[in-house]
Amino acid sequence: MLLERFRKRLRPHARSLAVVAGVAGGLYLAGTYLLDRLKDIQAKVTEERASRESLRRRFLQNQEDCTFTLLALLPTLSAQILEEMDVEDLTHQLQQLSKPKPEIAITSSSTVAMEDSIVSLASTESSSDVELLSSSSSSSSSAPPAPPAPASSTTTTTTSSGEEVEAEGEGEKTGEVGVGEAEGEPKEVGRTQSDVGASWSSEFQEMDKGKENLSESQQSVLSIASTVESSTVSSPPAAPLPPSAATLLAPPKTKMQLWNELKLLTFTRTLTALYTLTLLTLQTRIQLNLLGRHSYVRSVKELETTLGLGEGPQGEGEVSPEDEMVYLSFSWWLMNVGWREVAERVERAVKEVMGPVSLKKTLNQTEFEALLLEIRRKVEFDLGGDSIPRPHSFLPHLLPPTPSTLAHLLQQTHLNALPSSPTAPIRLLLSETSTYLSSPSFESCLSSSLAHAFGSLVDALGERRMLGGVTVDQQGGRFEEIVETKPKRLAEVLAEVAKFGRESLEDGGMLGGGNRVVDSLADLPELASFSAVVYSSYLGLDEGF
Image (cartoon, rainbow, N blue to C red; front, side):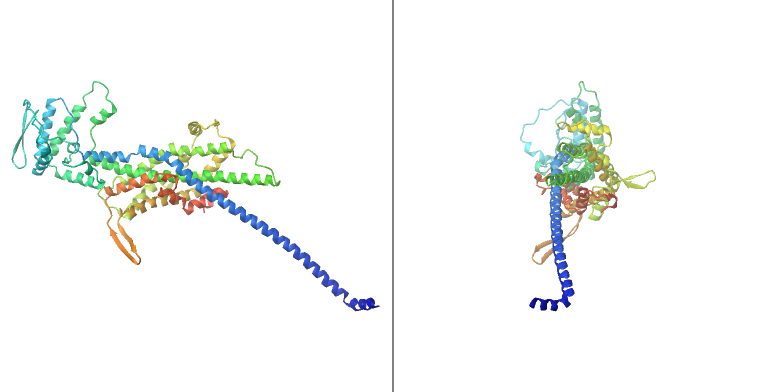
């Protein structure tokens, strides 16, 4: 009875109740579905984030490996550059010209007589020279005099003051003619060993002063001495001379010749170091990022195999550890052959640009940067038949251009179990490397890296106040001191340029803290972007960054 009354009351609302129940059930099912989907999406996002983080860590670690690999390869490259471009040897030769040279004994009596007359003329040219000679020989005045030699000829010379000086042909010599005098430069007397080569600029100043002090009579007589010496040396020896003797008998170079050679060689070595170091950096980045990408793909495939989601790594394109060793050995080409080709281009450009620049010229930062920019233009661009400059391809300097050179490289590296020809994975890696090296992205990255490396040279010279300008010295707190310096002469800048070139070739103890160029290139955003393109294997290489 009660149940029937309840049914009668619900019957009018049965449809509404059914609708409400259906809606509630639908909402429950939809909510459950949405919660499941959200959980799946959250898990997927978390997994993608973890994958991205793992990929980012792998990429950053790979870039650090590139820096350490570059520092490990640097000693091999620097040893060859420093040996073949020995700036320090030229500096030593300049220092030797400032030291008194021992006189070479010549048995010919006529030659001895000629030299005695030259000494008499050179020693009596000015009273100041006589005083210097007398003061330098005062320490040895207590020694017993040498026995008189038979007189064979006597030369009487009248100086500018009207005095007559007699010099016996084979008698006792009162002085000797050094290398600098034979070349039209004054002899330095009383200079101690510690004073020799105090600075390159002081040597250059002494050379200029010496040329002004010589009179016409000295220059004419000294030219006769050089003629006699050359005629004596030109006589054929009884036996072949060793290289050291041939070097001693060769006509010595003047200070001006050595300074010009030093100027060109200093810039050539430093700029060659910057070019080869930048190219080696980019090549190492491409190689290790390609291998890093293959390693990451291989690890993902192995993980899928472990989870039963796919098959393991297989196929001809799979890179083995042996293939990686062979592929990395291709940097041998740049470190042993390619850098010399780059050095030839740099040397030609330096001769054209820096050759006419006088050593006395003062260079501010703007002028110095303009000279470097002109050298870069000649090195990095080639003129075609239509006289339109086009970017120079550095690919032949980085990889062997022909099959014969490739075979030569494989023979020189002689790794264990090295194949006679590259395997399929190595050919694939080389093809990919050539593609990246020929892409516009590489040209853009190379240009930015070289500009950064050359900028490091300018900054280093600016910090040492070689190029003049205004600098601000922090005195502590709010106080600052503005210091204005004048630009130095090119002869003084050479020492700092050579020092920077040598420092850029040092490995910094494998800690990455001692090489300014390597550290600055490692932090370059353009290089990091190019490395990311290679590592992630984007196809839009011709679109740049």
